[in-house]
Length: 221
Image (cartoon, rainbow, N blue to C red; front, side, top):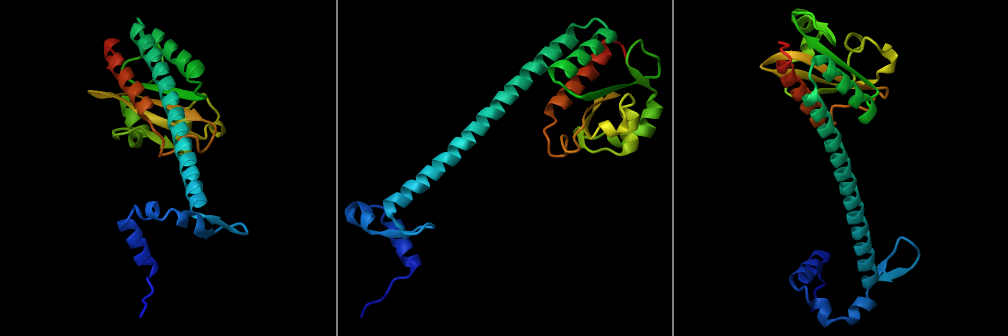
């Protein structure tokens, strides 16, 4: 009495005997697999199709990784040059000039705003009393990571005072903190979706950390 095998049993048998088709090579060309186009293809042809598809996916993934690596390399070089320029600045005014030059022309940031929190008037930059900063921007401060996405209209109007409200669609905001909060750096873009809460803010956080420490050098506390 013959007992028919289930598909699961066949699959299990072939898995346990990987050399089956080596001993029965004639079956590779005899077995036919239904194709989504009219007709059938052999098992070998099906395997080749699967291998080609897998290779295409791997090639695409490799190209994407290489593109990301190139972008990261370029971003690192731009950041390195900006950091050196800030370190070489002899004054706050020189530093802000270097920051403006690099953000606008090297990083090609459409909009940016740097707010400095100080009780004393400064010779350069937009200065805000710490008490006012806490009142107006407290919800954007004392957070572990930079905030990115679409801010409330009141926040955008306060941060980007030189830009019409309709021009800034989304932005990323980082606190300048070293020992205490010393300011806020924001970069903006016309697109509503350019900056979102999924984006990598490592560069902005690094730049904010550098600026916060340099403010100590220029005795801005």
